[in-house]
Length: 149
Image 1 (cartoon, rainbow, N blue to C red):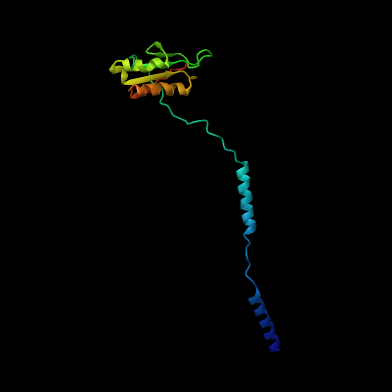
Image 2: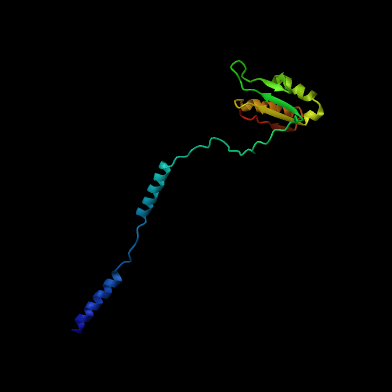
């Protein structure tokens, strides 16, 4: 009987030795992660930014003093005049006339150019006026804002 009992023990010992450690397969988990990644990539929408957001300072009380410098007012373009009407110190002016007028301006006015443009004026017009001013030696350029009515 002892031999029978020893046989059972040896049989159980060999089974314990033969038993393999359980293994976790990573393939199904990787599949799930890739499916989630694809789902989020397809379902996500990216809204394009319409432009750069700039926080402007609040408008202050307008000063009674007229600013010292040259003032260029650019009105909105019309069907006949694609550049719009441009006024330099309340006098009608074209691009070709601006450079000599900037050069002939008194030194105290040459220190700064103030551009006052309507809402519909194209950026290229404002940049062109700025280029002419820089070529004429005007270093400071400012922008004036008209209050809405």
